[in-house]
Length: 394
Image 1 (cartoon, one colour):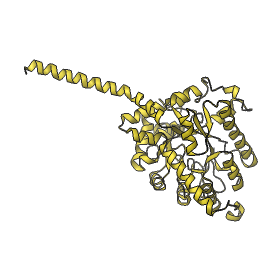
Image 2 (cartoon, helix red, strand yellow; image 1 turned 30 degrees about the horizontal axis):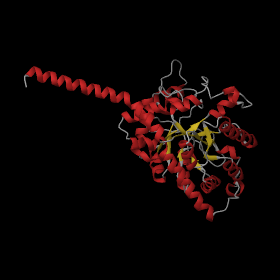
Image 3 (cartoon, rainbow, N blue to C red; image 1 turned 120 degrees about the horizontal axis):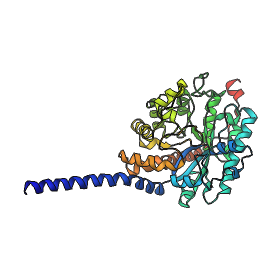
Image 4 (tube, helix red, strand yellow; image 1 turned 45 degrees about the horizontal axis):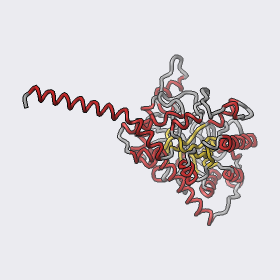
């Protein structure tokens, strides 16, 4: 072939190659949306119920009619649909400043919000209590709505209260929120117990017997280790990221990631900027003046990469913490943005099978295993009547 013809041919190949790469890049988002239609995206933590309470103390849905866009929130039905949500753990958060009967009452009011929202918008939401419920809701085109309690202070040191919250639909409980309990240390408080007390261990065992997932976001590393030692079912971290990437107490250390893999549990990577970007965390810790740095979608994917490396692809999920945060990750500003993160993972070489695990298959596996463990324990173990006074001498 003459040299000039060979040069033209090589240029043509180069153009086709560049064009193919450009087309592939633009196709990642289309692939991501297709995967969201095939597998339910189950997010571990959304604080819409508390956000509604902030908008209206009477918790009137007309104050936040989420069937239409609500710019003051990060969550509404149009954006949930755009984000491809198939299952959502709605957080029934109450702050750690609420204690005793006040915390119990407020948690009941939060649970009421979730039940009422599924009745107000039944074409979109459906209450879910099991993994099978989530799968059925997804096939019907609805978002399986699960309840997650954020903080063991909600049970007021009562296993009977724990059981009643389970009966009302609570399917996980975050062991602590920001402050220590009498029976468990939190990550953002000064350690007192060095993990779980004897009553704390009994709480874990009773959660296993019920089939309620043990959520270790917010707890100290020592409490994480104790709960992983005691739990007979897989645990979750409903909204935490990797401490090796962003060194803050709310994130999960590598040794705990390894223990979580052995336990069969799942870490649901969160989108809290101060847990994603070390620069943001350092800025927040200094209470520095001037413009704050921004965490990025790419950094969220870095946390997923790290957890995959340490714990494995079978132990990953997502827990955005939308409407529970005051800052957002650039590129993950609201619930519509999940496919953009999925597209980023596809760009990084994650297979369709990998993506489906991260979106929801891992969480469904954990739920099914917890249900199986509970069914076995209920054949041999009666509801615990232990008290904190008996076990801890309080």
